[in-house]
Image (tube, rainbow, N blue to C red; front, side, top):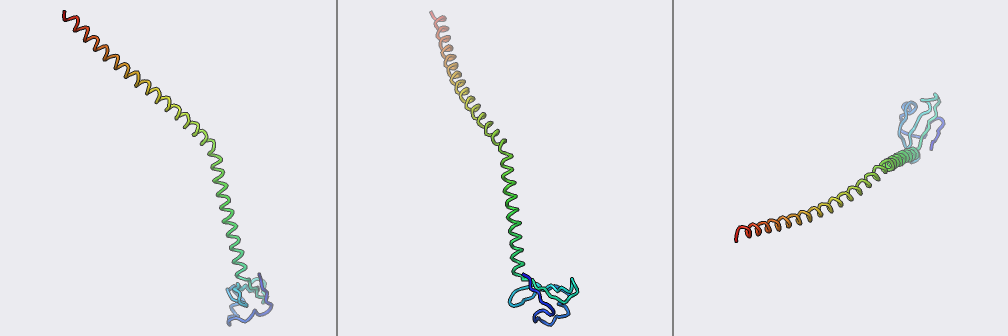
Length: 141
């Protein structure tokens, strides 16, 4: 909100010479204002007091909008990243399933090989025992 005062502004400290040439913080009617002398711009002796609380509210609103937009952009970027990675994740999932199937088949083959080894060892022991018995029988009358 802006307040325009024609001529001299409301009563302030005795800085009249400075007031006409520079912007300054001040209090008018209990409100914090920024006093911008129009003489700096136009040469006229008109003082414009801007309500500091209104300016601060607009600055806060603008900052919140920037923060909100930034958060939205980050969320969209993350969503886009997940969307772009999705096919790779699917392919990885399919590959993991294939690996699990291959590991299961290898474990089954290993079990079968262990059973075949045990059977071969048992057959080899039986053969050795048979040959030992036959050899003994052949040597002894």
